Each structure stands twice: as structure tokens, then as C-alpha cells.
Image: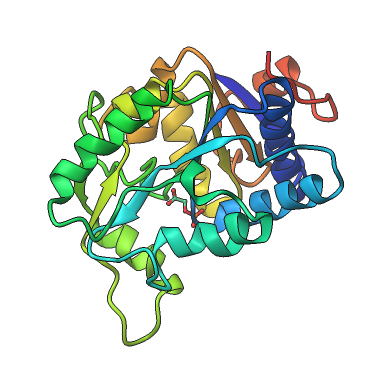
Length: 260
Ligand code: PGA
């Protein structure tokens, strides 16, 4: 794991945007794995700003999002289809044929999950997989107890995840109970995994991921097995890392981020 600790959220987001932009500059038709959630909102804003400034071309990539709520059709305001449409694809005028998300309204969600993994394979696999982390250590919706060898499938969301995501739903709406999520094996097959975590509430999960045992209790710890994982943190999210000083020696703050 390459652990980059940036002074604040803004700098961590900028480093993450840099890694994506560098990937797309080297390979404009790269396959990107995209994530949703509050952490990613400034990442998409940053990417859009760079695209508008002519610094990066986003229209030639292909994308596969990590997950979608079971039961929500693409047009539902809280679907991840809508999240992506509003924050990235719409403003970009992105070709819908290049943007892939699992269909939450599929009549057979299990079959949809199998189809989704096959579509990722058919596209040649994911070059860069963007990830957030849940306070409970999930990546995608791979909740604690997820098999570390799991394919894309349907997962039951924990109470903690549903409570955390309730902020995106109206007071009269309930957060769905199930999601289709890329599996941990799917994520581990990506050629480069980039996980962004910002803020103090993520510190314990980040420490468990990077320094705890490889365990289904913290699904993100599976990234310890990834041949190329970059963990981008702000100081608050890095606060519980025992070896923080070591990481800061290896990758000093202020150094340009690079794909190597
Ligand atoms: P957040 O979600 O960015 O909204 O905190 C991250 C996640 O649950 O993976």
C-alpha cells in the first residue's frame, strides 16, 4: 500500500483528482471504477473543473460504478445513477453507453450482479478503481463479514450504513435494505485501487484497513492484498495510524503524487 497523507481535505481531494487525471492522460480510453458518497463529491467537481480547463479529457473513458441500491430505478432521485448524472455525467455530456452502473430495478438482482462482473471483464477490466471507505470499514457495499473473495452480488446493508446514508434521503423515505455491489474479488482485480478518506470519523476504519489484520471484519483490509493500492488521506483520517511518521517519511507532504 502506498499511503499518502495530505494536510487537509482539499489537498487530499486534489491528490486524488491528480491520480485520475494522470491515468486518463496516459490512457484516455481507460476503464475507471467510480464511487459515490459525500467524499467523492469534490473529486467529481475537481475532475469537471480540469476537463473544462482543457487539462484532461474525460469523454473517452469507460466507467463502472461500484454499486447501486436494489429497488431504485435509474431515475430515482437517490439512486447512484442520479448521483453520477448530476455530479459528473450530465455536466460532462458523457455518452450514456460508456457509463455503467448495476441496475437496481433489475427483475433478478442476482443475475444482474453476474452480468455486471461479466461486463467489466468484457471491457478489459478496470484500470483505476476509485474507492471511499465506510465508518465500518466497507468498500463499495461490502459490509463486514463479506467474503474477501466475493464477486459482484447482492448484499444486505448494515444498520450503520443505512443510518449513515439516511442523510441523502428525505425524512419520509427509507434507505433500501439491499444493494448490488462489486465484490471484493472484483475490486482486487483492478489494476490500480485508489481509496480516498477524509475526516476524523474515518480514522478508526482507515487504521483497521491499513494496519489491522486482514479480516472480513474490516472488508477494506483486503486492499492489503492488492498489488497496487494508493490510500489518499487527510490528516484527520490518518490520525489513528500507528506508523504515520513512517508513511510521511516515505511520501513526504508537498511531493507531487505519481502513479508509480
Ligand atoms: P461517504 O461514504 O463518502 O459518504 O462517507 C463512503 C462509503 O460509505 O464508502
